[in-house]
Length: 376
Image (tube, rainbow, N blue to C red):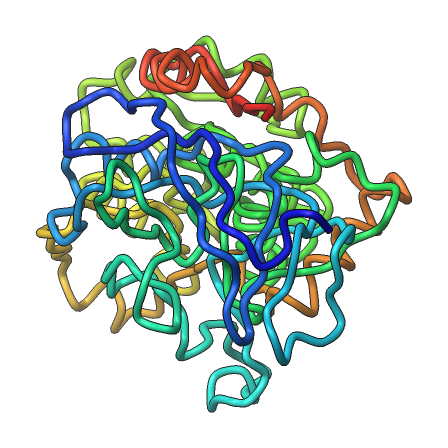
């Protein structure tokens, strides 16, 4: 290709600091080095985790930075030693890599590769550098992905080749929201048929949890949110009932316990709030309930609970990317979608041109969107 081995000049949404709107800037994207892949981003979703950075909730983020971690695109060029991926391939960047060699990758019970960038936030890919420059300043990478840009560079262990016919403006959701929510029910919780589930938070990830609970055969799926405008859509995805905690003047876990004969079998926290996490734990059945923490809480947050809640038989688990081993499973999930095993389309409530990215974040913060897809 004409651009192979050359610096590409393109547009990107640069975050110069917390509590500031993203700025569409001209940037330079260096060519990929050994074991790296440069991707033309075609579509990228706006995730609540990106908004957490914008609002300053993650104090260990280094600015300036290019956010975004849920996308799909086309390979522009590859660095040396890259195998199995070539220019022209349709791909999904992965914020959870899969090296296939580390202890976690070799453990069938884990999907958290030791090369994963989250939790470190050092702003680089594996070569301990970034491929972005703006106004002569190095711009940091986010979660090894950085998809709010026309071109990005990722490590080859952080990219999944997908079906040639996959619609990129839809399957980009497999980069985060759908995979995370659906997998949290299927893999992390292992929801059993005829069980009772409660889903706290009805954004794109929460609705994907509902899809997973329905596929697993749950008999009751209780959808919970403080925005009742989300209830109709939750029922379309499979929720059997919807509840607003603000409608009650007593602890919400008591409400759920009364509704379910002692508590739910599975509770999913998909908000990123410590208070909601604690409520979710208390809402599960004392003898056998399981809580799955999916939401990302602010950096300084500390969760507290009575240890007898666990001693009596409850379980608390965390779930990153739905427990999927990313390079292995994302292509399979895309094929399942292509074979109509599940429908992603209703998750996408808005599509905007990339230049309107700040409008997309406003829709998210105002509770008016489930998932906004930006097209580049």
